[in-house]
Image (cartoon, rainbow, N blue to C red; front, side):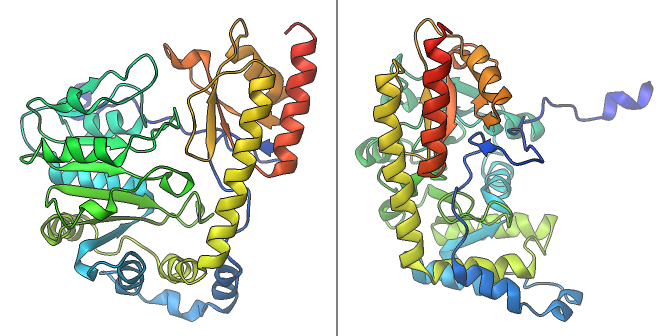
Length: 352
């Protein structure tokens, strides 16, 4: 059909399965714990009548809370509908040149999707055989750089020294550090935003703060970068976040004790799971996230994925080169992970 020549076509991002029945769900890196009780209080007392009015277009109530929490100025904060929305806006805003942007070849697959949607040239920079990102590989001409630290799906974290090297050696490019999983380990690049005007750090409340269903993401950077982001945002959609999300985001930030307790529990369960998987013959990069990227020599990851699924245990399997040898296993509750290990032991004893 003649009209199809004007249609923008891309290969979309494929999210993890969302089963609608009760299973052990370890495939989408969600928190195994409920959000802060303060969140429930806010939702319970929320004035439904207020929903007939538009929410704050500048999201002031949340940007103010985030600025106070991270000890920055409010005009150094940008918020959006999950970090996916924030990152998408970053691609649209900062990667408008003709030079290719750079990101790792094994990383969050949405980066390539956004580059395709916005017609941004890109180069995927290979990780090492040990899934390490080398700063020196980004010492080349580029139109921008984006990488997750810790990395997804490998779980490995790069040192702050390495992160700073990339930023420092690319002063003419915006460098975006995606810190979706930094609450579970690794060093944050936030201390560097006062020293580098070209650095933007993105965060999410979907993981450690257990608010995946509310879609709250944000970015922190220089006032100049945030101003550019807001200019594009208000050219696309003035009302990006709904009123309940803004209120819930603030409530979560006000309960630091709960945040620290649940994050610590996830980390402790992760370390326990690492030891159990090692005993079963699995190997994996040293995860600093709320998931483990595991492989077992001589064992089909795809078949193991299917067998676990039949037992109502969902993990993530990627049908692509290199990744197809691994399973990405989200850290659930201690009880859920103990069930996973028992089922794995049973399957492997059957000469799986």
